[in-house]
Length: 287
Image (cartoon, rainbow, N blue to C red):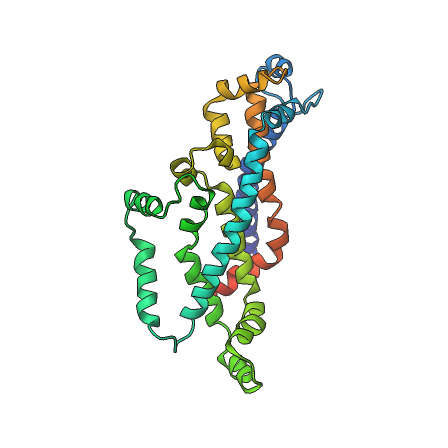
């Protein structure tokens, strides 16, 4: 058995190492490409592992247009405000569904489950947003996308894992519903909240599709929509950089835009990593 376990571990190590290599190498290659010049790219034949003379021209170029900086600021707004809004809706609804004595609990829970699998379609969604007068507004990116029902089910599992005796003891000590919720339940489900916070942050940061439908003003676009413009309309974007007096390198511009768009959200993970593994296990066991 010990020998079989060692063989299994070695096979796992080989497979995971291969997977890590497939992820790291392209990412590293994009980073390198964002720091090289057009001349070095041409001389290398399109394959280079380390820049001889690293340059920041590609990063300076994309920020000189003003589009990337405004996109970065808009993304921060959409992510921070959107996450707070989504977490409020998710946590409060999940807390209510975790209470067996909640009036209409089964009805609301059935509505949540049905809505999770069936929706009214994109046309209906667009008409609802339009009827609310949100077309062209930044709030069109936040208000209609506030609640993820699957995340709500996960959060409900965390609340249900808390022993009922703890709430009963708090009631005996004179604690009210709000105090029980904020002082008893929320600290005990912080691992689950950290998971959902990461999920919502990544979802909000990477979202661009609904912006392309509801927001036509480029000044309100997030960094992901600006990145899409860079990748799909490189010629137009490089012309904007040419007007700044710099010689653009289209491949380097694309690579720099990709790095700028993904690094900020990658910085969030270390802060929630210590909660992530434990939170996933607790939710999975309870579910």
